Image (cartoon, rainbow, N blue to C red; front, side, top):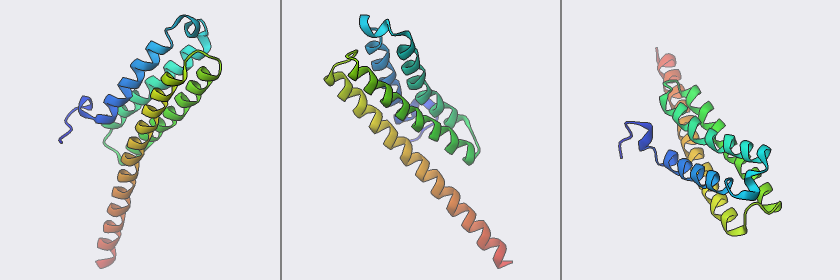
Length: 135
């Protein structure tokens, strides 16, 4: 599969799906009245897809990894807030499980990207070093 635009990135699509779920869930009457948690969870979940887009638009490997790591951290932040919503009864266990599982899957997929980019950088550095040492 060739990725030509950020809309082609499967993990971005997954992050968008989670964003929709969070917005729907946080719009319920009880949850929507907790302005602090509602705003914080929405900012965190939006950060996931936003940083994936930032990652896609960068040309520098260090920048790529940085934005992907921010997206991963946003997954954890969102998971924490979903746990809070569960324990204060803003969401039920079924909704929690669905959102949490999607966040974990997103976190894993982003992690694979990070690992791939770090390996790519390591291999490139090793090749450059070998070329310099052979001269």
